[in-house]
Length: 91
Image 1 (cartoon, one colour):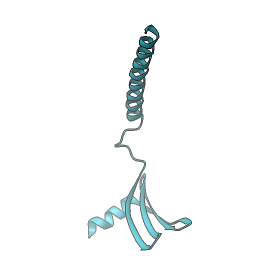
Image 2 (cartoon, helix red, strand yellow):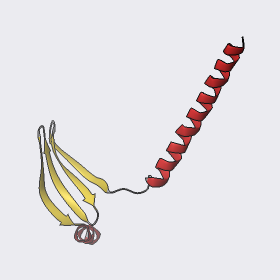
Image 3 (tube, one colour):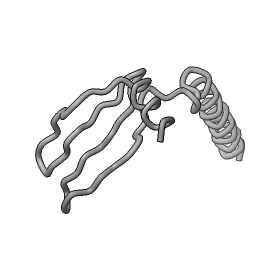
Image 4 (cartoon, helix red, strand yellow):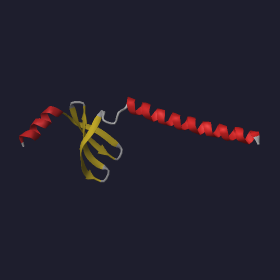
């Protein structure tokens, strides 16, 4: 009977320590990589055919126009984000 109680106590402590470790890792991960910080952002997608299209991605102060096909990804053009936002404001 004493061995059974010792096993239950061991399982209880293992579960408690496991939950504490899980929440600590979740908190540390959230502090290191907050959700509001994004390195890149997809601005727009244009689908030309199934599995083919053009994607506009903002990275830092640049906008990359990327062509995407079945087995191919290629940089088509690179724009300055400030220039594009000026053109958008003029419309």
